[in-house]
Structure formats: structure tokens, C-alpha cells
Image 1 (spheres, rainbow, N blue to C red):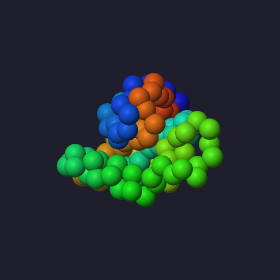
Image 2 (image 1 turned 120 degrees about the vertical axis):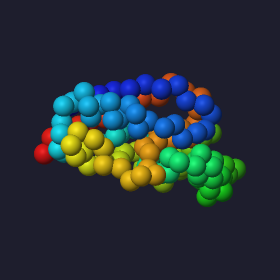
Image 3 (image 1 turned 90 degrees about the vertical axis):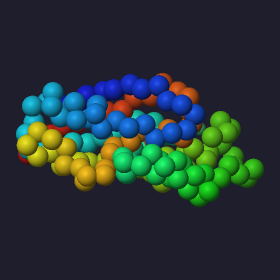
Length: 131
Ligand code: ZN
């Protein structure tokens, strides 16, 4: 089953989407299987990281800015090549096991939609597969 969600993002941020994803799992009725969370954009991504201390998100964004600075040599006419690089490095999907109808996440883990080129109206997909 495929579920599609929309969100309005700020300029650059990691948006916590675990509740929506868990909602899709619950609605699917799947007890055992896998859940794929997919971002269909080229300047945004999906990741799993700490959901306890919000400073982790702040530090991740700082680290990505340091790793992928805007460069005058970039050719892409849209002018957002750093955001494309960040999105590719982050990846555009994650897979999480489903057990007893719940996402199998670590105590401190949350699922994030990663915006690198906002603000925008964005979409992500959740596919829940029994197995
Ligand atoms: Zn672009």
C-alpha cells in the first residue's frame, strides 16, 4: 500500500515525520513486514537520526553546510547545486522493519524529511509491504 503525504518546509531543516509514517503502518493493517519511506525530490532527502536532542538536527545541518558549501564553479543554472549534493549524500529513502504493527526504531531514532532548498511544498511516499 502506498501513502502520500505533503508538507510545507522551511528554508533548510529536518522535519520529523515518524508520526505520519507510523500512521501509514497502522492504516495499512500490516503487522509484519517492511516500510519504505521515499522522497521524490532532488534537493531533499530522507534519513533516520536522533529524535531526543534537537541540537543533533542543528549540528547535522551545520555539518552538511560545511561538507557541501556553495561554490562559484558550480554550473547548474538553477543555482542550487549545494542542495542537490546534500540530497544525494543524504539519500532519498529509508527502509524500516515493521513488527507487531509498529515501526522497529531504536529508542532515540526518528525519521526525518530533509529539506535543503526550501521553503517549498513537498511530498513524501510511504509504502508498507507485508512479508
Ligand atoms: Zn536545481
